[in-house]
Length: 218
Ligand code: E4P
Image: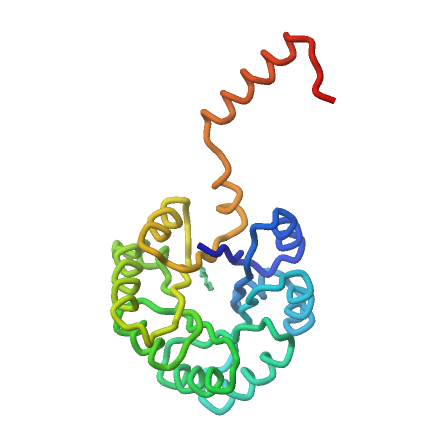
């Protein structure tokens, strides 16, 4: 499973990239607002840090303007994935950009039928939002399971399932079991993945016992 980080915070991206386990970045207009920086230069900076796909989202909702924005964003770097909303116009833009060889991430997916349409439009990534469905007492992970199963049935679908709106480690583990290709994860949740109280307890005991041996490896 590939890990993308769901942030536009350059310091967080640099820090997480230093682990060697970061495969890409996703941003959206809300994350750009939170970062408080100018959009295009910020995306350029992110693309210099990360070799994998960097999602940059269009801001318009009509076909013509979205297409122009998508083409402009695609020119920023070879690793840009243009992010478009799952609307009729968004999928038309997706088809046009993907036919031209641009990676496209179709966002705001909340149903399996939408995911089928995105695959038919040639999306590189489909982003189903698990957390926002869970927030409404709907089963976000069931949607991931459904999409993975449907895509497996059709070898001519090449769209990768990018699990978005992740809130916790269970969302990641369960999605991995289902075979989802990518998880885009907030920085704090990536850091939570390392922790287990038995690891802390066991390590403290080993450190303590080693000190009592009076030895040194170096
Ligand atoms: C990712 O591309 C999405 O924009 C993001 O995961 C949404 O997450 P949220 O529901 O926490 O805003």
